[in-house]
Amino acid sequence: MLRRIEKLRKWLNENHCDAFFLNTVEDYRYFSGFTGSNCYLFVSKKDAILVTDQRYSQQIQEETEGYKIYIHEINPFTTLEKVMKFLEVSSIAYDGKKTSVSLLKTLRNLNDKVDWVYTEDVSLGIRQYKEPSEEAAIQRAAEIGDLAFKDLCQKIKPGMTEKQIAVELEYLLAKHGSEGPTFGTIVAAGDRSALPHATPTSRVVKENDMLLIDFGARFEGYMSDMTRTLWIGEPNVRMQEIYMVVLEALEKAIVAVSPGVTCHELDNVARKVFIEANLEEYSLRGLGHGVGLEIHEWPRVVMQQDTPIQKGHIFTIEPGLYIPELGGVRIEELVSVTKSGCKLLTGTPRTIRLT
Image (spheres, rainbow, N blue to C red):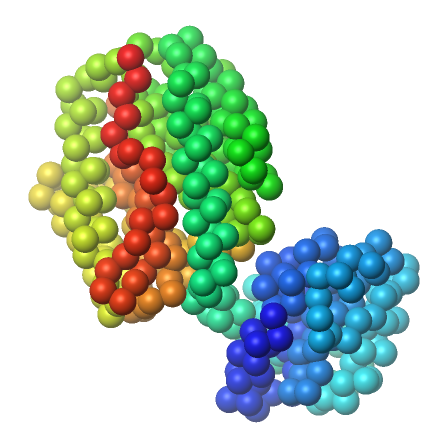
């Protein structure tokens, strides 16, 4: 983990700043390996310090190596003040998106000689390039998702509600080794599938429905993400046509993945399919998103995003069409960028008919 700290120190040197402060679970886990729910991480050009409470005094020793560790008492700020004095720095960078105004105000009051430097997404930029061990964890999460979904497909029957299917899927994910859902599982039947982020309800799955299911598994903190739109019997002809358009958009986008292609260009590959089918107005403004310790990371594969895709990126490709009062279709794969294209991490068949 200490090698990851060097990436932060490189940023400090390039931006003429003395230290960095991080306090989100994803960030301190990435940079230290500590998995507890409470921690503050300070990284200077010569020190790396973790501050947590008594609950984790043993765990933090077991999970980390090479970090100075402080255990705070009821008031953490007394200890944070000591840490800031120990560091002997005049400037500390923080992420303005992740540090509350209240916390920042208190930190500033601890030492009026320290200049707190506003930044955004520095750690997210570092974390976007996945190491082999990270890819292995995401791959395992995806495999857990595949196994759970295969079992689920054997249990889905007309007459079940969306909620029942969601609960069954989350049980199967845990059974196969998931540490927990990565987000609120989406199960939407019939016309409710036109809601891109539908919350499962008591709506009953009927014969000849299409059923959209979007979910993820978690392994060693890392997440997977997959969507399938199932055919229950024989959906109406129009929905079948929409399904085939989405499938074409997905397949063409996967083929187009290559280092150097921009996120906007990749989004446009799928969008062109929708435009040619005269359905683009029913699509969303993006094609996918990075996945890692958080379900939405970099890169952002969306319109007007000129970031080039690079080896080490892991992201979703999830074209979808959502037509009010009719229904929606989304098919989502998780891919890892290689030297010449991409590797699929999700392995579930794209087209599934349940009869």
